[in-house]
Each structure stands twice: as C-alpha cells, then as structure tokens.
Image 1 (tube, one colour):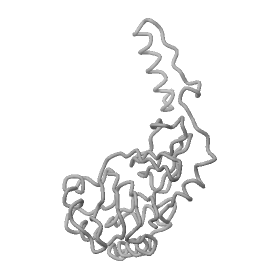
Image 2 (image 1 turned 120 degrees about the horizontal axis):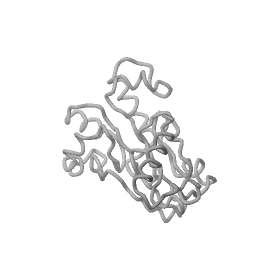
Image 3 (image 1 turned 135 degrees about the vertical axis):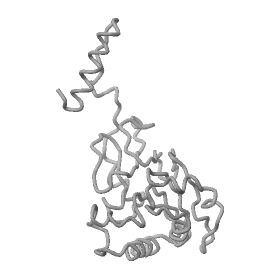
Image 4 (image 1 turned 120 degrees about the vertical axis):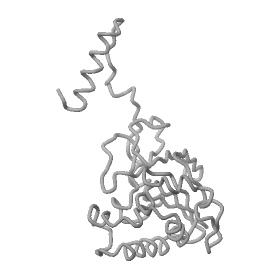
Length: 221
C-alpha cells in the first residue's frame, strides 16, 4: 500500500543553502555530494509506489537537463506545488509530466501553484501552497494549511498551519506526523479576532484610519 509524504524547499544544486540552513544538510562544500545525499535520503524513505507532495523550490539549477536528471532519480509519484525558484520547471512542465522515470512514474505527476487536497481516508482537507497564508480556505473548519518557503522557521500564524520544509524537520513528513503537530490546534476564524476596523461614512476619514492601522501593524508608529 502506498504511503503519503510531504516536504518542501529541498534546494537541489544550491550551494549557499548549506551555509544558510546547515542543521540537516551534509557538511560539505561539494554541491554534487549535497544533491546525492538528498537523493539517497529521498529514496531510502520513499518507494516507487509512494506519493510525495513537494511544496516548492525543488532546485536552484538553471540547467533544464540537470533538473530533469535530478528529479528522474527520485522515487514515487512526485507532485510539485511551484515555489518562487521553480520557474524553469513551470515553463517546461509538459516535459516533466510526460517523460517517465525508471520506476514507471512521470518525472512529475502534477505541477500546480496551489492545491486543495481532500483526503477522505484521513477525514481531512489540506490547503497546499508554497507560501504561508494568513487566511486560507477552510481555516475556520479546521482544514490544514501546509506550506514551505521559510525554511527552518515556524510561521507566526494561528490555526492549523505547518511549514513542511526540509530545513525545519530534516525528514519527509507523513500524515501521522502532520496530525501530531496540528490536530490539537484550534479552528480559527478571522471573525473571532476582534480586529475589525471601525469605519465611518466619510471615505477620507476611513483612509486615515486604514493608513494608521497599516503603520501600527508594521511597527512604524
């Protein structure tokens, strides 16, 4: 039976990521050695029958053939939620969707910017996006929001939201892992925060109020 995994921000072929986020990266200056480490870790965890949702920034390479070679070595059904460094894949996504790997799966099984993933077997709906969202679909219903982008940090947002990035966890997360982090957190609605803006009939007065709120939020007044 296939297993389900989540990860983000592997940053293949990015030499500086070893310096920026060293905790779970191999101690090497050789980027090929770094990439081989990630490939081995992936394939030791994920079988050809497994499913992986990768929430973006898979590679820093600007060489399409090199990216193709890297991703062709990764086991499983690999679904990519595009990150800010995945533009080359986005431009040539049909190539990745239509070419098969040695395990019989396409290099990428799907490519999209955003995904609302319903998992009835887990009685849960996931909102998958590269970036952390302050207000996501179904937040008040307890839908999980999984994201990446911020590497080894936890988003300072209330509710059932989790950074699945490799640099935060050092491994690929299962639904059991994700439930362990999120299931006991509250359902949160923006209507319950008491942060409504008091508005007036005069639009110019409102503009001043809105401007002051933006300045306070950004600690400028």
